[in-house]
Length: 338
Image 1 (cartoon, rainbow, N blue to C red):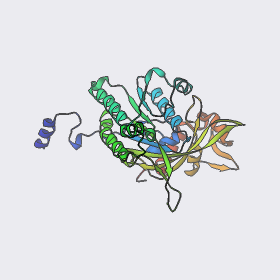
Image 2 (tube, helix red, strand yellow; image 1 turned 60 degrees about the vertical axis):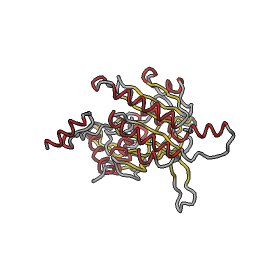
Image 3 (tube, rainbow, N blue to C red; image 1 turned 60 degrees about the horizontal axis):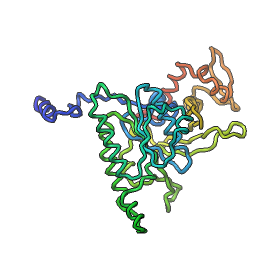
Image 4 (tube, helix red, strand yellow; image 1 turned 90 degrees about the vertical axis):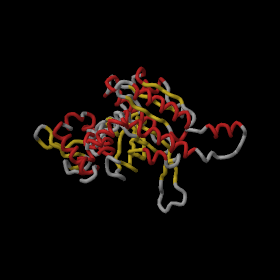
C-alpha cells in the first residue's frame, strides 16, 4: 500500500489517485426536458454527462442546432456564473438567433472553425487554459461543436485550391486523433461537450439503417449518441416547433435503443420540460389514457383531463410526489440493471 502511495506521490498530479479515492459521483447537465434526461441518464432529474461527449446526430433540418442551443440555454440558466464555447462550422449561429433562444450573449463565445486541425488546436488550447486556472476559480463550462460533418481539412482545402479532384482519405484519422486528445482532457476538466453530426443511409443494408459520418472517431469518443428525427408541431396553421423523436444509439449511462418524443419550440421556450411524461406515466401504470383523456389524481380525486390542458398547467398535475414516481418508472424503463 505504501508503495502505491509512493507511486501516486511520485507522479504528482491531481488526476492520479488510488482507486479507493476516486470520486464516483456522476454529474449531469439538465437538458431542460425531463423525458430526454431520462433516456440519456436513466433519471428524469439527470441529463447529459457533465464531463463526457454527447453526440446528437440526424439528417438535415432535424433541429440539431436548435436542440443544442436549448441545452446551452438551460446550462447557462442553471449556472449563473457558467459559460459556453460554441464551435460553429456552419455559420448558422448569429446574434439574432441566440437572442431569440433567450441565451445570455455575454456568457457564450462563438468560435468559427473550418478544418479539423483548427478545431483541434482551438479546443485543446481552451481546455488547457481552463485546467491551468486554480480549481477553486473554475466556473462551470460547456463546449458545443456544431457540426462535425461540416469540418474540412487543410489538405482538402489545398487540393481544392490546386484544382485537384481527389478525396481526402486522412479526414477520419484526423477526427479520431482530435477526439483521442480531447476526451480525457474534457473529463479531467469536468467540461461537458455536445457534438452535432449528420447521418446518411447505409447502402446495401437489409433494413433501413442510419449511420453517422466522419468515421469511427466520434463513435468511440462519445459517451452517448442520440439519433434525431422530427415532425412539425403546429398551432392551428402556424408551425411553432418540432416533435423530435430521440433514440439512444449508444449510451454508457442508460439502455440503448430506447426512443422518446420531445417537443422543441422555435422561440425562447426551447425544449418543453414536461412533454413525454404523460406517456412515461402510462407505461408505468401511473394513469390511464381513456379516449384521449388521462385519468389522474388531482386534489385527492380522480379526474379525466386532456393532455393539452395538463401540459398547459403542468405544475398542478406533476406534483413532487408524482415526479418521484415518474423517476422510479424512468429508472426501470431506461437504466441498466433494472
